Length: 435
Image 1 (cartoon, rainbow, N blue to C red):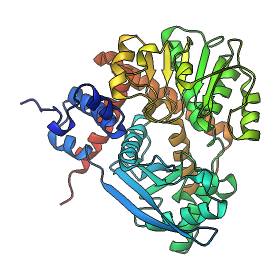
Image 2: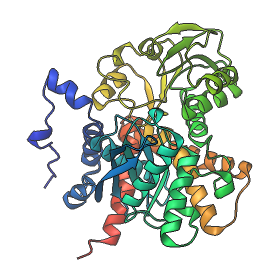
Image 3: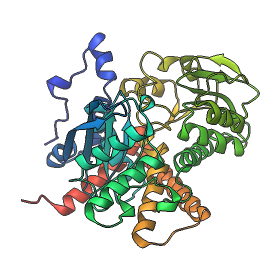
C-alpha cells in the first residue's frame, strides 16, 4: 500500500495572501522539499514521522546586566533536529529576526547538509534575539556566557557542537568554549568549531564555505559545458561567505560584475576588484559608499544578466515575486534557504541550474568537521591538506547529487534531499527505536 504523503490540512498552502505568508516561513519551505523527496524515496511511514520532528527544542531566558547597570532579558533558542548519524552540528546567530521556525529550519537543513557531504554529524542550530550592533563587547560576552550556561545540558563534543553564524565569530566561539570548559572543569577544545587558531581552530576554516561554493560552481560549469574563465558572477551578500567566494572565483578567472550587502549593491560590467571592495568593508563596516561601480538595489542585483548568481546573505531573497526576473544560468546558494520552495518551480521552468544550499554551502560544516577531528586527535593539518580534503568531498558530493538528479529526472535540490534523507533514514533503520 502506497504511503500517503499529502500535507495535513493545517499546512495546505492556500492562494494569494496565505500563499505568500507560507512562502516566507523557512520551516514550511524546508518541510515541503522534505515531503517531495520522501515521496520519491517511498520512505517508510515510521521513519517519515521521525524525520519530520526535531529531537530537542530549548528556549531560554537570558538576563544580562548592561553596562549602565540596567538588566535586559533576551530570548535564546537551541534546536537539535536529528543526531542519528552523530553529534549535532550547527551555528549560533545573534539577530533581531531570530525565531523558533527559523532555528528549526536551519537545524533541519544542517541535518541534511551533513548527510549530503557524508560527514558523521547530525544537525542543530541556535540563536539569540538581539541586536549585537547596539551592544558593547562586554555586554555581548555576558550574553554569550549566559546563553551557553542555559543550553549546557545539550552541549558537548559528543552531543552538540556550535559554530559561528550570522553576527557571531571566532571571539564568540572562544567565550562559548571557555564557559563550557569552566563548567566541566577542564579545557574542551572540541565543543565548538570556528575558534581562533590559537585555541584549536583549523586553518582554512574561515574560507571554507566560500571555497566550497567555488568548487561546486566549477563542477556545475563543467557539467553545463561553460568555461570558467570569463564567466560573469553577481554576489548578493558580502560577508564572510560572499566576499570569500567572490575573491576565490575572481582568482580562477571569473569576472565579478556585481556585489551587494544590506546597504545596497554595485555593478560594473568590466569587473569589480574584490580585494579592493573587501578593504573598503574592513575600513567602513559595509559596502556603503563604495564608488567603483554603478549603485544598484539588491533586487536589481538579483536580476542582472550574468552567468552565475551567488545569493550569500539571508533566507527568502528569491521568491515568487522576483524569480521570473532572474536571468542567471546558474545559481549557487551560498546562504541557507535563499530560495523559497514556491520559487523553485519558476526557476525550473526557466531552466536555471540551481546548486542547492545543503550542497553549495556545505564547505563550512565540512571544515568544521575537520576542526573537530583535529581537536579530538590533538594533531593539526596544514592549510593545503584542509583545502585538498575539502575539495575532494565537495566534488564527490556534487557528483553524487548530480547522479541521483539524472537517475530520477529531478532538479539538484530534490536530489540532494533524497540523498540526505536516504542516508539519515538508513541509520535510523539500522539503529532501531530505543524503548
